Length: 186
Length: 267
Image (cartoon, rainbow over all chains, first blue to last red):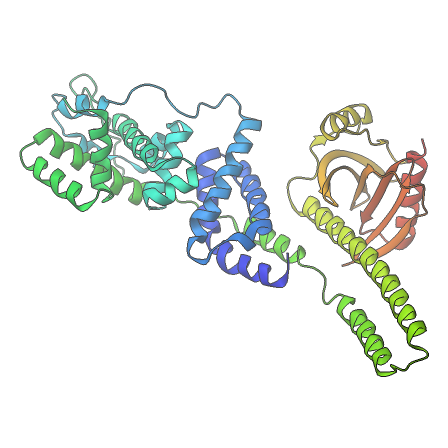
């Protein structure tokens, strides 16, 4: 890497290291593994920094990180389920459920731990799309590029991810299962 | 009953990713569809909850430093001598041009061509070697500062050799070094000189030693020693393999290391 490339790397890629690490951590769900993957990914980024255009540094880097994560998953956790293959028509059942409390309210009341656990429990193909949209606040186009899928697939996976999150955070049969409320200490 | 496509459209609507007509149409539908309204509200609540409460982790400072260090280390060492030597060649050429006279012309031209050819060959070879040294240092540094020192952690060469052979398509000589204080750590597959190579890792006291090996059809040669950015490097051809040893031990210890690697490579 020449001096120019090194400067480009420091100025364009390094500012997105937190986003890179956050994505790797959500995909691998392990801090050590995430560090390994991010280091590998950034080494790749050094090699290809010359091909980076100025305006797209964040999705460019996240695409490399995501790709490295998947290579890593394939080698280290071949059993990891990437997606569910069931049809996604659950949302209306949820909305129509005779609930004493609208899902919206239950979701708003969700605790930090519940939300983290629900995201972590998503199959990785949905989890990454959810994290890129809700935590990195990226556009569908950027997400499509990073996850190497068409925009239509981004839409369907995001809708599915949110459906799964809703069922985790807002139980569909409140008559049978009340929302547990942890005792507040102070 | 709505189709699946509608379900995605609702999410895209909440994210503001529909075209204008799509956004307006969805707003109209919401006015008289309670279930749709509740659904939109729950998507928004989920977005807000995730953005406010889900973990957004920052990269650990040590990782950031390590990566910055690797980026710095992968820069070529300060100005190479190449441009200056080319300058000399150009000066010679222009001096020759200045002498343009009838009789010595042919001889001078021949001399210039010979000089240029020789210079080029020397420069080409030295720049190729410099690149190799550079790559070896970068690879060594990477292995010592990163978490990826070895692919296979074993002091047993019967474990390491088949592991490397299976991944490389050649079988590197793998053995412990007959040196006091030397410990065989394991092996990994690395990339040097545009090809996958075997990297055998030893610990010599506090120091890490990387011994790179790859096939080389050239005949046996004596080790050439060099120092790059504070690391000692030796490389040579032996038994159909090219060997490149690198470490930051002192000169005497490095010489003993190289001798030990050569004696084990000789089998």
